[in-house]
Image 1 (spheres, rainbow, N blue to C red):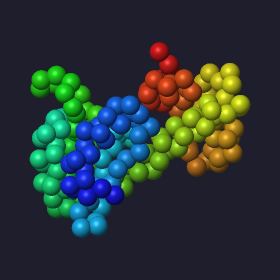
Image 2: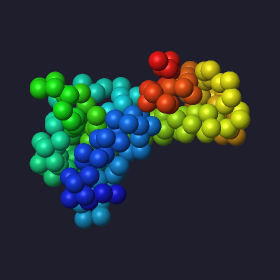
Image 3: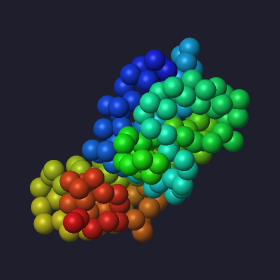
Length: 178
């Protein structure tokens, strides 16, 4: 868990990690006084788990300044608080979200889906690195899970496809490598 101060300092590096890893980036818990209050996750992962990134995007400076008030809002409003999209410098007034800060209660609502997505990336990554991944084109998550010894029922995502090549591109599940 990062403190508010640590999160302010680390925000540019965290956004860079989100740009690099995309939906495979692990969410980061942010809190005050040893209490988790929010979760910072990549916009790509948020989009896969919650399917909505249509919100105003703050730049890094605005997000740093507003972090304490956002966490205060999360404490007061819980799951009803508005998530905060954060982007670097993708153009004046038209920033592309790179990260999303949401309340711990909001995260709890999508945590199972986040775990499924991250597990799918982990399975695809391990399979691509193993001999079993040689010649791999596209498999369902269930097929990947079975090959690496995970219970496919845990994932419950048989219709999602992952391409081992898409991990190198930072793309999400079901997208063909470019």
